[in-house]
Image 1 (cartoon, one colour):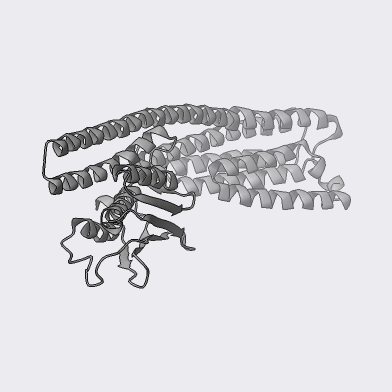
Image 2: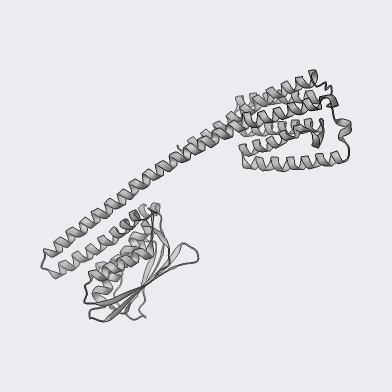
Length: 403
């Protein structure tokens, strides 16, 4: 259901509830007014308050039907209900009147319409009830109570029946229906989400399998060639493919299908690259990465960038069998959006005159390109021993990634 359809559905429900309240309360008010005259022997203005409320409410219903201004009609209905219920309560015993329960129902109706109206009605009615109590303490009701002593019990019965019917027959049914609709909708949404998660997990699994197939094909192609340079190129491509395959594998194996635990991913990637480099180099990789989760659109280019940096270090930084070390440190800045990544090794490094943007080395070009893809920048620190890359980047969303 689209957002427009949801709004229209909600407005139709509110309109239906308001019409139901107006019709029922008007009918009951007319009946109550007739009872006041013919059964309760009330000859004051109390019956005419009921008749007046019913008449004005029905005019409000006509206004709603003709002009379809839901908010204004709801405010009018609430104001009429408040004035009518307060007046009847004042003229039938005040704080001791059973009709005071109708004021509680008005608060409920306000919250059903909108939280803002509910708060207004709640504050107003609390103030009115406190004032009624103060008037009762002053003895004011003894002179304005229009309900005869002989009719008080019957008036109490009718007041309670009036309150119970409005509460249960109007608002109660609607709340039960809304609750049932909400439960049904929630169940349907949960089923749809579960179905989509299964499909998405299957997609990640298939992508991982396809990438591993590509990696295997590259491996076979490398074995069929006697040219060492071609073998190195194919191996680098195979590493890039496996770096992406690892992300999809982690996604379908874990609960979260859109974000991965980046530290675990880098640990797995670095172990793979060390093993791929062969056993003739004694190189350790030290990670200083917090336990954070990154979205797939950030993790893939960042993983490829780390892959290129580690591969370059292993291939060119440690040409001799030395005790090599690669440090990878990731820091999340205070703004919560910016990250700082440092990748350094203690190898022999490369010429200071080499520019990442103009070099002919594919690996170095990729590091620069991937940093830009992450809406960041990469700088080489020439003051450090070996090679050090300082990358500042931001986590990107799927919309930014595909734009």
